[in-house]
Image (spheres, rainbow, N blue to C red):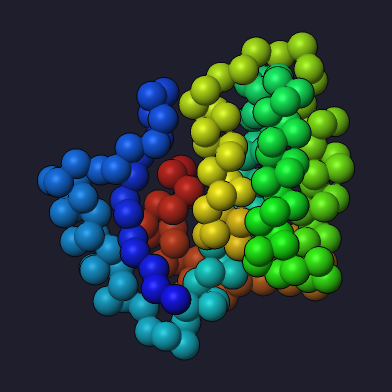
Length: 170
């Protein structure tokens, strides 16, 4: 299995690959950040990122779509996509499948039917389930909560993420 990094931006016109200059800058930044990490620390940094994301964004990342997406058909598509992706990733017995199945059952209750559909928000919300990194972030944060480890990140990892302003205002 191989992977390719494809830098993109999400606008009101949908998802777009970065232009050449922006893409070049992205890869320069990525190279610099990568030089700061050693393999032994990757898991710690990822878990710290999940902690910070959970503390700063978990509720708002999901609840912001409540006022933007209303189509019952769209909710059905998202629910089915969750189930399909969970089967692909972990099969019918894995943690990912159980969480996705619970989410698929409850997703219709997260969004009132009377609200307006917004294409950009729908694209961003769908991206949370289509993109492996987003899905793994959600699962990592939930697993850390279940294991009682949320918020126990070492200071060096917190400082690294704060230095690069991972969550904007930290």
